[in-house]
Image (cartoon, rainbow, N blue to C red; front, side):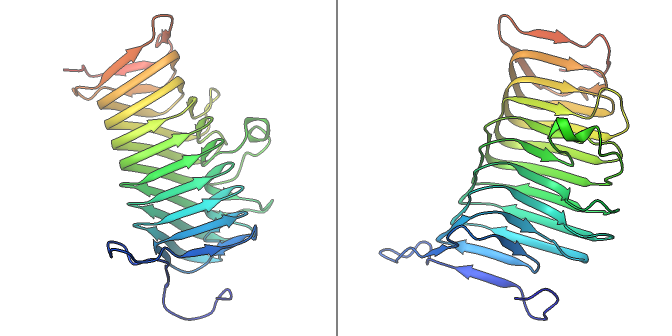
Length: 276
């Protein structure tokens, strides 16, 4: 549907889930880009070979992509809460409760390609299913080599995981651009990644890591300035755990397990509360 066109949300139903012998439908994008500017659902079947997926590249308002079943496959990058033009205030949400999402490169949550002031907000909400990202996941962030020169992006990004599996092939980077807000919250489910970096060592961002449940396994994690929470679930790391911000254990029962040669460096940070 063209941008700005009126009409109800769009549903893509490619199979009748639970019906024995029902055919499985396939919608093939053949390497074309897909931009979602109205509420959209995948209720079954396969949506595949999307080159780039952008959600909420619109002037204002909220757009939600819902996936309770089926599979969505993106060849290149996926951007949730994306602004491609000046003075936009889009809010994009991807809500997955079942099925699978596969992204061949990066996932950006809260993102813009405009050199003018933009105020995008992105939300990833996962209560089930499998989300597999081959490269990095950026929550209000971008590649480190570009982050230092982008200081007034005003991104807001959030990933809420209450179930399912999030498998990240490379790093999870949260709010590494000045004047951005980024949060990752896990209450249940499984998260695996290489490194997790929250905030910037020199400050200027609002980045938060909040874990009250679930299972997290990484190589290293760095929690920079800001307030973070680790009150439940399990957190396993193989290399380093660096803290320069504030970590609240909140009297919880979180389990932190380090590999034999791992380094726990919390001397530059602040620890609040005791684990039970």
